[in-house]
Amino acid sequence: MKTIIILVLILIALLSVMTKAQVNSDITYDPGTSVEVQSGADVCANNVFINGTYSGGGSICTGALPVSLSSFTFSADKRNVTLMWVTEWELNNKGFRVERTFAAENSWKEIAFIEGKGTSNVSNGYMYKDEKLKTADYKYRIKQEDYNGNYEYFELGTVVKISPPLSFDMGQNYPNPGNPNTKINFEMPVNGKVSIVVFDMLGREVVTMLNENRAADYYTVEFNGSNIASGVYFYRMYAEGEGQKFTKTMKMIIVK
Image (tube, rainbow, N blue to C red; front, side, top):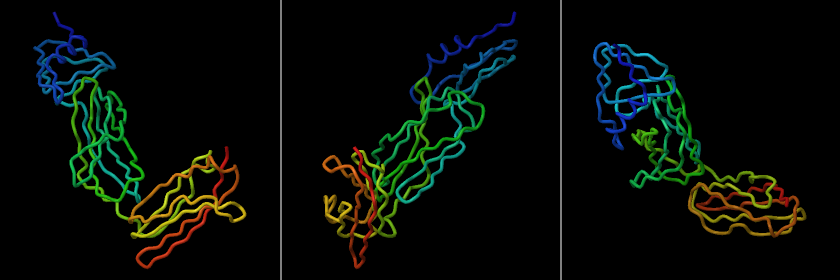
């Protein structure tokens, strides 16, 4: 009489041989065996030998880890890096831990967790945007984990270089209106002195946000508007360094 093997029994057998990094097991089904993996349930081992028939809506895979990664790439826009990766299929995939380190170091730090698709027989794309980075060389990797605690690292094959800005610039404050705090991004292509001053509608100086020397890089400063009245204000950046000068004025709104 044919033996029907239900998923629960398969999982119990697998869990007894799993380790943190891989599944060290082979599964062999004798001739005449009927293997049923119920829909939504899955089983994976180093090698699965089925000498009978297989049925059910679940999945069986071979290999220690339950994700096939077909690509891992990136794009960079000034100080922002977008990571993109694609899986061919997934089995019991909990998700991906995104990690980053300076290229000259090996001190990996988790910066995000992206949920996986669980079990999927189709290709899936993922994306994570790492924003407001400082000028430096970076390395990235993702740590894929399944619900049983198995994991595998996939490292980006290219060092990501964030170069200094090509020119001075200052962006629109955000959020705008500020309620009452708001942030301002600015860029320094060379080492130099920079100041950012806030004025009221009559041109009177309200507060000096920044007045110091800065190295060539990307920056974000925060303005605390809790001590001024709601209304329209102007903020002006003045910077100079290595024979270059820059001035820019923009409008912002503070509400409370």
